[in-house]
Amino acid sequence: MSPRGCVLIAAVCFGTTGTAQALGPDDARAVAVGSGRIALGGALLVAFAWLGARRAAADAQARPVIATGIPWPMLLLAGACVAAYQLCFFAAVQQTGVAVGTVVAIGSGPAFAGALGWIVVREAPGRRWAAATGLACGGVTLLVLGGGSADVAAGGVLLALGAGAGYASYTVIAKQLLRAGHTPERVMAGAFGSGGVLLLPVLAATAGPWLWSLGGIALIVFLGLVPTALAYVLFARGLRELTAGETATLTLAEPLTATALGAIVLGERPGAVAIAGAALVLTGLLALAGGGRRARPVAEPGLAGAGPNARVTPPVPSVEGSP
Image (cartoon, rainbow, N blue to C red; front, side, top):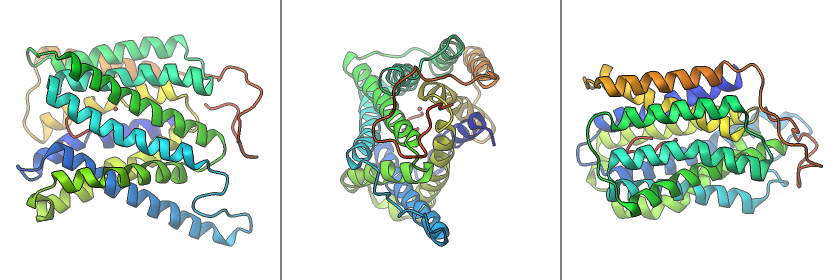
């Protein structure tokens, strides 16, 4: 599968979270659902990485699940960014509403990722990325705000920007580790495993009896397996070959998927403005996915800490808090 295909499928998985939550227990709190999703998804990613290492054990050069060369500070920082995204997003939604919080968090993610990728990983974003990102972000705005008016609270907007920055930060950190030769499974296991541990107190403080009901267990298992564990392995496999900015922009297929599932499964009927927004998102994604040339990083003397397999040419949500 192509790198862009991996990221787009990951985004489709991300887009199932809202519909899954709508079909789950009525009394499930969004912050608890998001924390439980990351906690279980992180544990599953660690298990996947461990099983992968077991399968590779016959190879004399196989490394342990957490390779000696992985810088723990970077993994822990990535985990903190995963947790920060969740907490900032839910706080933003509480202060400024679902529509504005979602638009700012999702829309700012690609911009932050492009800027951080340029500064930290030295990946120069191209004109195609800028044009496609502008189209897609404009479409997301119409898609989410097309249903009516929205109140804007400055504090909530700042928190939503913090969520977008957190998403972009763990994307760029993961990119650095992937370029250093570490596997997607290992990198995601470290980031989401540590992020899940950090969110356990939040889950304990916000979960209610719904969590132990059959519907609650099914909801968390689905969210932990499909839009977290499976989706982020695919996300990382695409990120290994693409720039951080392009990867973040491709995940804007998430709200498009969420809108389609809302119409098909939940019987929601988007208005003309929302449909126009969906068309803009799709246009931006097609423009980016159709690019034959991958963006190149700015020339650099080398990547500090890179292993012998380092790559020198490398190639965001609804109220439940995806990506």
